[in-house]
Structure formats: C-alpha cells, structure tokens
Amino acid sequence: MKPNIRRCISCRKTAPKENFWRIVRVYSSGVIQLDQGMGRSAYLCQDHNCLQIAQKKNLIGRSLKTNVSPEIYQKLWERQKEKCLMFPS
Image (tube, rainbow, N blue to C red; front, side):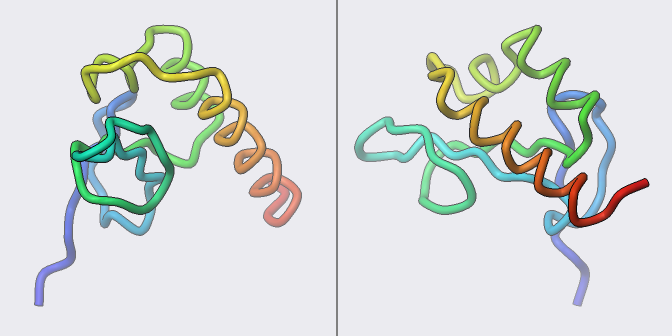
C-alpha cells in the first residue's frame, strides 16, 4: 500500500504525512486545532525554518482561509522546542 504523501505549505517538500504537523480548520465550528478533526488541513514540516516562514508570511492562515490565533503558533513553537530537546543535532 502506498504511503499518504503530503506537501509542506512552507518549503513545498513532499513526504509521508507522518513527517508533518497537521493544522486543521474544523468543518462545523471553524476552530483551528492541531493533528485531529475533519475539515480543511494544512501540513507543515517539523523544521524551525518552515515554521518561521509560515508565521512570517501567514501561510497557515492563507492555506486554511481563516485567521490563525497566536496560540496556535505558540503551540507549534513549543512542539519545535520539545523536538529539539528530544533529538539534538
């Protein structure tokens, strides 16, 4: 069975969806959440540069066609920080 391939909204790299963070605008409520829910989705590499560019250019908001609260970016930065602590370069 083929893996589910997705594309990063920032760097446009394609990879299996397990390599990305999923940001979802839930269909019924319009709430933005991470990793779960049905609705419009955007995928972002788990890379510092991709997150920085996505925030600077509002790529998540543009992809999901809605405003993204600063709390979502804060959660993503916390995930990035945890990833760096778990897997130092």
